[in-house]
Length: 263
Image (cartoon, rainbow, N blue to C red; front, side):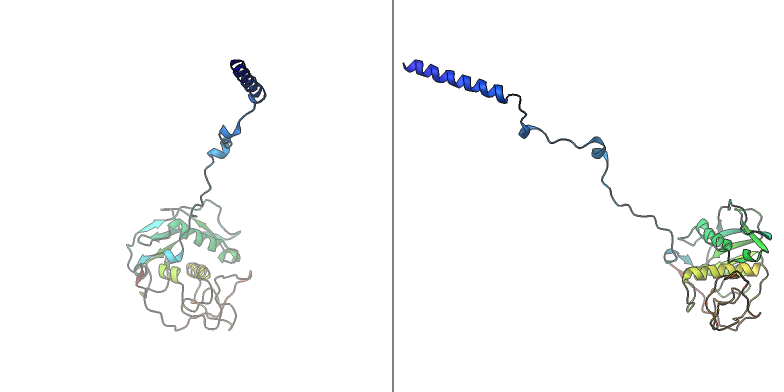
């Protein structure tokens, strides 16, 4: 009896196991499966990491010695047609003195060209057009960004502070380009436009002028670097489409001390 009962117990266990296998043998067991992989594109895409943006040179990072090397790097030529609708084509080159760091010849040239091509600049009078040419090409003038010492070597008079035009050289003192002048009352970019138009104006035969009316804009040919004399800062010869002038003449303004360089 005991062996028959034992046999029935074994038989019942076998039947139960077979039934369980028949019912659950094909059911997946998720506890033992790996988590699904992300799609291939998502898996291969790198995480987005913010990249530092390239920063153009600003006056705060332009440095220069008091005395430069007197050698130059010239900007590439401009490929566009001359700026202006009518008038004599004035070809010019742009150069930056070696030793001035933080600004390239091409970067400086773009600012010069943008200023001269502005409709408020000298082309508005329809007497001149401007075209920037490349290194070694024939030019009517050269716009030079120079150290204070080289400015003195190129200009008629050594003050190390102002900019000048002497012959075919339009000399922009890098000290003024970077620092501007005290009490100008306008952003540095406005002063930079002024000094370009003022010195190029000399190359076009323009002479110094005085403030025509207190509270009004200064003529671009006024020596705004040394004083405004009641006028307000103005970088354009044709600020409203008309030539803005004052009486011929200048003021007996003192020139500030020469610049000693900036490192």
